[in-house]
Image (cartoon, rainbow, N blue to C red; front, side, top):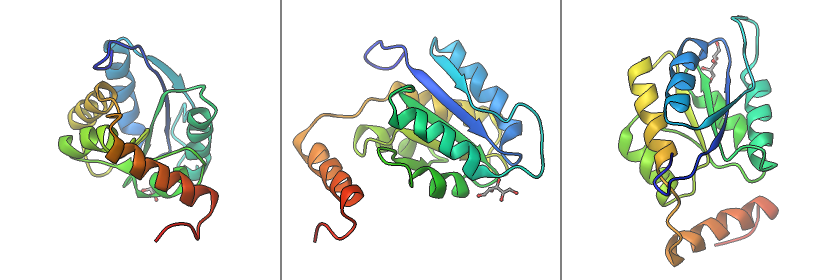
Amino acid sequence: MDEGGAILRVAIGADHGGLALKQAVVDRIELLGHSVLDFGAGRLDVEDDYPDYAVRVSRAVNAGVADRGVLLCGSGVGMVLAANRIPGVRACLCHDIYSASQGVSDDGMNVLCLGGRVIGPALAAELVEVFLATRFRDEPRFTRRLDKLRALEDRPDAGA
Ligand code: RB5
């Protein structure tokens, strides 16, 4: 459960670079009592492409089918690039606990990206736990910044 006691629907996707981390992440999500929506990969395919998984997970978040998303590739970078092209998605690469929490509380991060060639399963599971436990802090300064991000989504030339 998250800090408010809610059970979350968590969409997950991994390409061949992130697949080795996926089961540890799924296990932790389920251990915490949340539900997993698995968008693959179901098996190793060294020719698969990270945008395909990023799009499936991100669309689930955008559509409200999932509350949060977790994306895994080799570095985590490709998943960030692809996921942030889907409206409503705020995807970040966080390999430290502070960012995994603060990214949600202050910035409204709703998709966590991790690099399977950079970190191991224990840290990945901890990062996901913190990510899911944290809620956005509904304070004027944070909602104002989120509104500015949303405005940029609608009109890339908006803002200062
Ligand atoms: C795949 O080989 C690798 O490029 C991908 O998993 C990811 O690291 C991209 O950012």
